[in-house]
Image: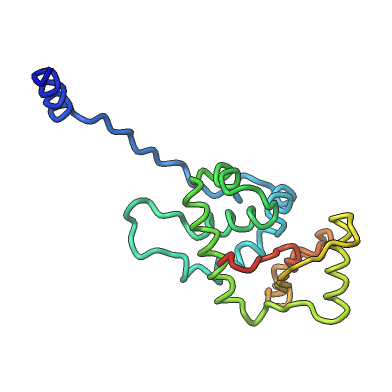
Length: 189
């Protein structure tokens, strides 16, 4: 019996481990393959606004090295915006951009911190009448009058800071410069 155990142990020690091959997903630019309306439907922002956000947080999100194929800042911002716009699970959001669930979680956290750091002067919390309107809107969504709404809404007004050249007067008017649905809950960071 001891000889059988030794033989099995020796086989395990001498066996060459079969490693799972590393798979590198294609992280191409999704903005190139989507038209303007599809970009707005997926991310709730126009292409110009997304590029404005990427330019603002690029220095913080960019890595120093090319080791381990880092996620580019554009993909990081798109992943964050998709997560905030849809409220979907990280696995679902990551799958849409060929990123793993764990990487999606790290990206959402780092982009949220970068946006807060860079765009602090643009983030305003609703006060007074606006706060009660937001609270009432949440109650209407929940369809219950006794719902106590605990919220922390940021009103990120990017439109004021965009160059006027990016505004196309012929384009349909949309309120894509204001991110009102981004509820950043306490303890998320």
